[in-house]
Length: 198
Image 1 (tube, rainbow, N blue to C red):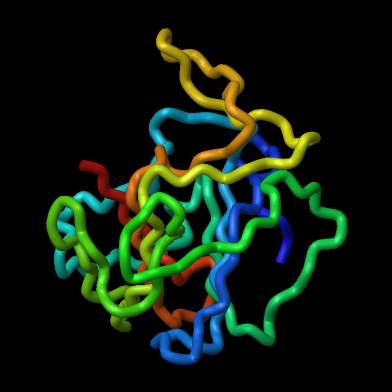
Image 2 (cartoon, rainbow, N blue to C red):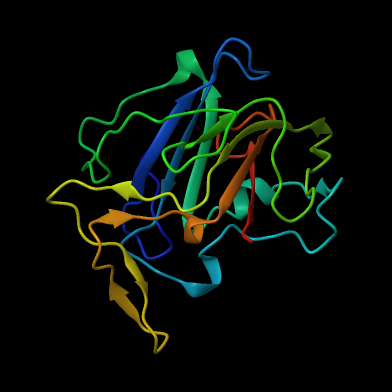
């Protein structure tokens, strides 16, 4: 599998990877997240939402691969992982702090149930299979970047693209992020993402 690219052809930045622990319903699987940082499109700052009520939704076939335009989510078996030696690292390697309690240093929590900010939006199924709750990423997260990483593109007050002045990247407008996963055949067709903000 190659490093994902944005619609404009630039390499996406690798944000984080998580190998699910033994107690998790998807133990034996790993989740890796990439997002476009050199390209910006205000219509895709968060993952595309379904046009139907989200709670209990049956996600249309191929939606989970088709909606990955400015991000990429790979869910795969641990033994299927590979390393890209020629990939330009941008996000600094940082341990992720997981917890069942909220706090500014907590990255998120995996398994159990999501803690919804704006009401339950748990989906029902995809391609005939139920989706498991994978993890929740706490809002207001920023990702430190290495010195040579290019700045993330964002929108200025005039609606134009500009380089981010802070030396970090953000993901999905720093919203609360909820990840759900299925065990469909393709690793890039398994992850459903919902964002919420209060």
